[in-house]
Image (cartoon, rainbow, N blue to C red; front, side, top):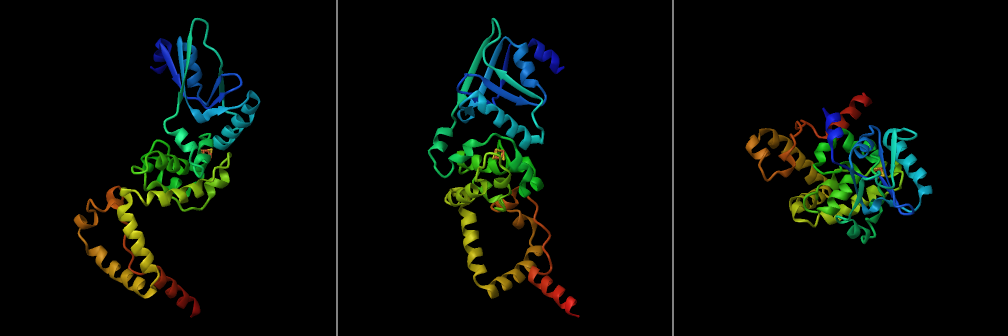
Length: 272
Ligand code: SF4
């Protein structure tokens, strides 16, 4: 079915993994060969790329293609590394260079590092939050640690909560082949996100939590009250539309005892 569509196509549109300033050519990296097939079967080829995809010289390409394949899928090299330097005979070749907020990001000294991303996906695979919640839970074009940085920079209000979907464990920074300080950027972005309207409730909750944690007795008492009250609340209150946390999530079962009580109990058992 798809093969026939490819055979009849009049134009092929591909993304671009790297563009080489020295030669003017673009390179796509795939394991399926779909970009290759599309371009070779259509008279018109269109390549769409972000401005950050440009590398200086052809000699640098080897480093980047190896980094990309190794960190994306553990391969030494991807199955297809397709180079497009000129149109086919009687064909047309167009390159679309997209800015879409990237220049602005370049001007932000603490966040410009994220433009180095080669979209290998290694930070997603290592992220404990992504591994448990999956890509769709981010509700953004690019998920995972790099997606949280890019999304919240591009649309601070829409993605204000994404920088908080992070344990700050730093595993993403460790694995990133181009050394983007993702956890630092997420932490910095949290401070900015907290100023957005979307995070009004979170600001109040965090301030209250900070106050509670400074007073252990009140903290313990509040915990007891909540463990007693929460299981008795009707769903209409627990899942009220103002409770944005519960909009896409189910409340966990409320435990009967606090962690401190369980810990103490365990210690007492061990003493006996
Ligand atoms: S931020 Fe680093 S690890 Fe994550 S996708 Fe980009 S290059 Fe890969």
